[in-house]
Length: 346
Image (tube, rainbow, N blue to C red):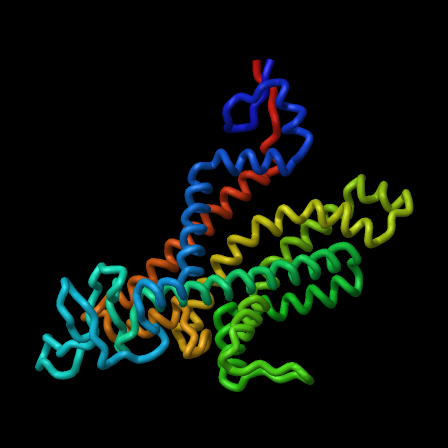
């Protein structure tokens, strides 16, 4: 006699007790068996490692400064010294065109932008900021949304009414319109409140803006789940036994909604990175001299016909990262699905 997890290979009877004793162990086992999700996780790890290695690549491999113009610089292509900015070969031949991809890691691997800067090095540095803003904003969204959803759903009444109306106010605005409006005001002027002051170029501003606009999209489902849990027998039994409010929230409610938050996180992270790229492309996100994938796409907008790699490289990086996060999020959701229970087989 043995057992199996739905959709998976049979499990020995002796292993059932160990597996069934921990829901997290079951979820981990399901996730590890999902080859597509694990592949996407590997892709994400590679992207993160490459972006973290940006200073090493720029200094010791490419030997370039991706944040300063290099209009008069030279590089090596097939053993010959050539100018980074070359005379235009299109139209009337006026002006200059940045060098295209050399496919040499040491010399402008993806070519140069209109300022003569190494696109490959800027791509890695931009990825650092895009990932940082996405992760920080997703954490802000999930943490605040979890607290708001717990409090509103558990206490109900006036508390629920006030918090729900606040969520409705944010929900009423189209998310990109709200993000653009906040960014236009705060990025241009900075932010000051009492002793706190943020310059217009601070990365904390896009993190806060993106994190806030998506709070209702996570808080409302969590509130609904808390309302459902609040009426469960085990919660009413704990109340009858005199459990404190803190114990109910921490031990009985939060532990049952944390899986929902975990599933939301990679999906919110993907959306946050897309939003950051959109705001940066509109020049109201990451500000110079910092770079992000969105700002690099903006830099390459005028070079689409001559040096398309400048815009295509960050666009492809965003697409791969977002696709990986969505597939990984689906895998986590499937692994944490409480309906996928152990069944007996003969």
